[in-house]
Length: 342
Ligand code: TXA
Ligand code: MG
Image 1 (cartoon, helix red, strand yellow):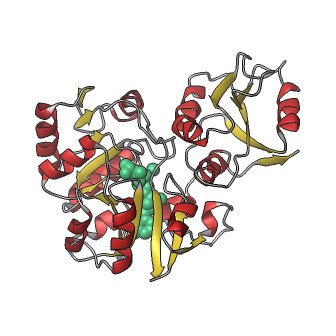
Image 2 (cartoon, protein in one colour):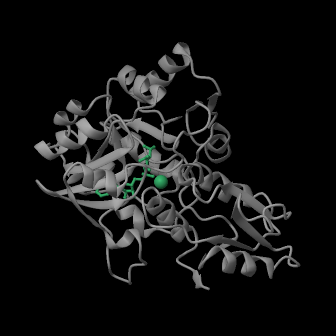
């Protein structure tokens, strides 16, 4: 398939992209979290094409993207809790799971009776949804199992030749996919995937929040995460990622013991003076700057894929507080849960 590629998205490109979505085509587009691979959420056949383009298992449901929160009425059974969350966090990087209405085909929800709803704040995403006149079902625009795409170039790398159009919007501002919650009752939420909207921010809105086990632990065979996507090996570069748990002194010392080995690489902080200038080291930011780490982590995991001689990547296990929990979750999955306690 010939993919039409536009690095800059102006009014003309947006209209063309909206027409493609309307008529059942696939368009990759920027959002504030990561790039999405969009299709008309009201057309089951369009959703099927998304799964094929990504190589994604068909039981893994898609998020529908809306121009405004009140549009959710048309597609799911909303509640006061939804509107409380919407007034605090939408538009923005929060996805809420609710019982679906018949307007949304099962081909979009992986056969589930619920649907995931998000209202992106990125102006290109917002205008694309408005112009298309339909909800846009969009998973992250990466090939299934690879790190999510946080730049136009990454999308071209993964999707050129597989979809109708790619429209650019520079680097993703957040770099981690949206926070996903399901509503338990008027006071309780369940966190299915952590993101920029943190557990603490949800608690500050007066909710009790429990964390789905799949966020921080490997599930045993037969156990099911609440977000089906959380069970797949994800975000993984070709090399094996190994996380190191311990204080900085111990982590740096451990990393230094491999410097003769060219097949070993490091994800390190600005503060790791003895590591950061090594050939195979990549700096993810300052240790204290979790936002920058979040923005850079997928890009770094992808960069390592361009050096096939690298077989092992060491990184420090992130903290679980604030946006750290989202980075912790993505790194743990990239590492296939391999953690060395130092
Ligand atoms: O930031 C984001 O959310 C990005 C951008 C493009 O908006 N999208 C994204 O989509 O990350 P995706 O498909 O890569 O991840 C969606 C996750 C999956 O883990 C999926 O299992 C879960 O959301 N999900 C979708 N619908 C669900 C539902 N009805 N119930 C439970 N989990 C659901
Ligand atoms: Mg994804």
